[in-house]
Image (cartoon, rainbow, N blue to C red; front, side):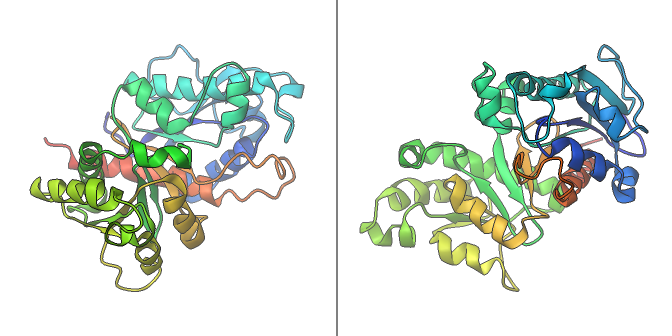
Length: 329
């Protein structure tokens, strides 16, 4: 990362018919955000009207100048709030891919993504499972989704997977590797090695095999293997009791590894919805996103709260700074 007073964060505008453009513009006007980072927004030319202070930057530029890269110039009908179109679906993926390309070229210190619609991107012609999967493919690395909040951090062993397929997707070796990735990824952010709790898959962590064998046969061996590698982790624990303890004083863990999407996200959204940030671990640069969707029902009505977007931008800048400070001389 090139040295400088503020990290350069490549920001994708998200769904042009969702709340992304409005919450992004509002968040970028916040003094705390302006002090923390230099934004480079990849979006539609119409975003310039929302934030006139952003200078336009050419898409073929090769540098670190903050501003707005106009990836598209959509017709008004393709960016109407709450009325998504196929052109808008293609556009939101184009913004993400442009931000990724900028980061891969080494011109960004972090990536922050405004919400997209998986359904609308897929309907526009490109199957799309989510930001995390797209980033993993683009950078060619194994990644881990971390929901990072003030009171609870939860990583996901499986992401956007039907519940019926979760047990078959859990493998001891992969869980061990994920615990290593979580420990390595969090260490620069915390300034020390994290203590990690591991959730069980079944109720009561399997109840000694009465409620399923995955906890004893797959998850527990992964915890033991990770501990042999020097990773500070414990479990598997019954997820309901473990995650409920995060709201109480004295919770002894820095993060938890959940086995499936809703097991982890229900807890983070109940505890810290506005301040929880989606972080992708394992990439060459940090990536963050707010923990909410496109919200077509309130788009353009002045009701969307920009706090989660601001939290995601601030976290992107902080992860970039911590990562840089942790790099060897």
